[in-house]
Image (cartoon, rainbow, N blue to C red; front, side, top):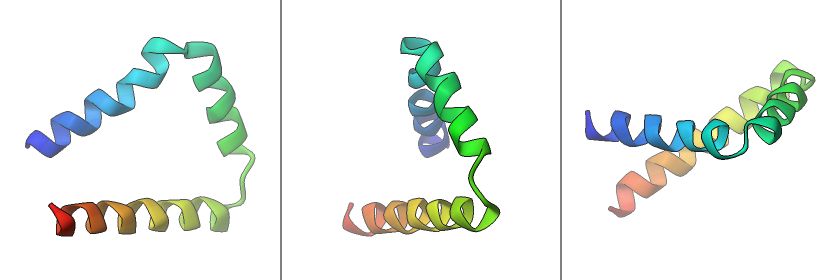
Length: 55
């Protein structure tokens, strides 16, 4: 539950601190192909698993 709370805090920082830039990033991501989005998702998941394993 703590990890989920931390995730929400981190996800909320970008729109809180730089909403215009956040909107630009979301628009850029929406232009990516499905395969590219999946690749980034896989990379994020693997990085998360690595961090959990290290800690």
